[in-house]
Image (spheres, rainbow, N blue to C red):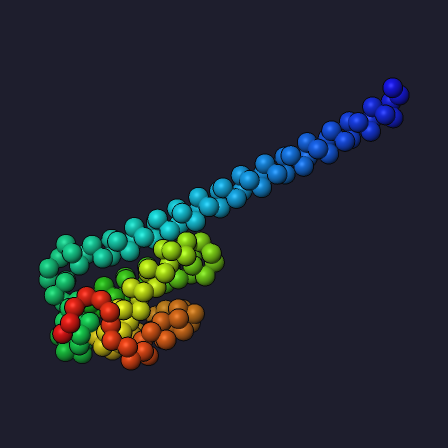
Length: 162
């Protein structure tokens, strides 16, 4: 065997090794992408659960939420501030989830449940009143997304009946 033949065989082996390396790298990147999506979904779900936990752990806040989601304008100024802060926290987490979903970082199953929860919350009269004066706090994209739910005349499907 001459040197040219040996060099040709070495080139073929090197080419095969590069293809195998690229395939392995692709598999690794794909696995990391899946893990990153799951971690993002888990972190945002934890944040949302923390915001929701405030209602279950604080009877006064739960009562305020019930009153305010029904009729925000009837609240005293101090209670409006308290509920407004809660609504802001809740919608900030939801806005973060909205952007992660828009970039494909949240699993569709997680997003579909969250989307239904957002729809329900946005259909309450108190939330509509609050949103009308505070939507400028949020990004234009999120405002456009929520506006379809806020404008809906459908009856809310969660929590309670007044």
